[in-house]
Image 1: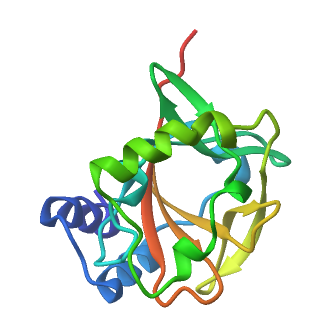
Image 2: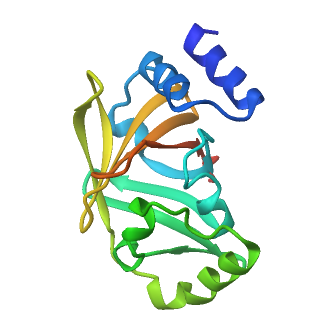
Length: 184
């Protein structure tokens, strides 16, 4: 096991890192090629005392799906027993950059889940490109209608550490993607 992977697993066990610790870990990880991204990935938070920690989970976030470089579902959410594509352009961007944390209560999550039928989409809302971030060129998911890039680094063959890069956000938001098992 490489030092970076060992450090990642220790970070997960620790439960929460500072932004500086998370950035140091992220910088140690290998870059990701576009083809590696293909498929459906289940997401989870990677706590760093960010004001958004826990928000996606509270709202029923499932993950992301990468069909090819030009066809990406950036926000999949659980809705009942289904996985639904959500249009990120219909989620208020101010929630991500405001000085106060977005609501993460069960009530807020229930309200969000109730509006999923109004914000779902059948269109792909992102694409992938190789971009340079923090000194390395790696796979990046670029939202089509928002100034957000999610830049990925490889933990292992089935795990990625991502950073949401958004202008005016005071600290980066980290998350983890786990490759969904391929079904035949």
